[in-house]
Image (cartoon, rainbow, N blue to C red):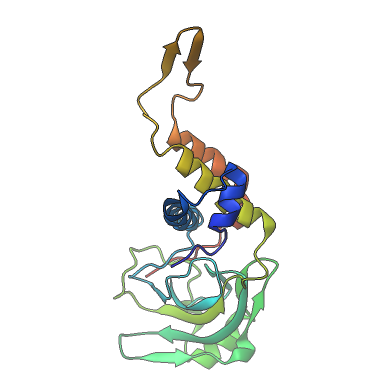
Length: 227
């Protein structure tokens, strides 16, 4: 399995490494870095409510379950979404209604699947307006009904990965590599005339907060509710 956003070649160029000594560990760290990035923006498979491939960033097929019979709009995790295969409203474990494709559209600007009016959807699904809560104020589980299942294809194609996303994965992999032997408890050190004091007492956790705010803001807010 290889990284989806960056590569060992890019990471080595960033680190100034030419030998192949660290290729294996850099490959592993790049995968871990991209998974961490996916968790930051809620772009990961969830066994309770998401059925899909192990791909977090590249285009793949997914089925996402959202609490309630959504009538307005819903955020999907794996943008950009290219195709919506089906939208089903489940009222029980064995009963569901398929919504016609004329009742929704992909809105790339807002990263949502937008439903085209409450009443047409209600008619098509066989429900009344009261059955369409925008948000369900209860603990959601696989046994909570109704819920909406959206099957779709989403993610970046290999040739269209945004530059900032590629650079973020590269930067994070480099930091993970450089910190792999660092003593997190060490705050200061003196050797002869050389003295070092850690300027960041929070260490790795604080770095990740800064990384999230600096690199991942454009990819935040894409996760929908999960049942």
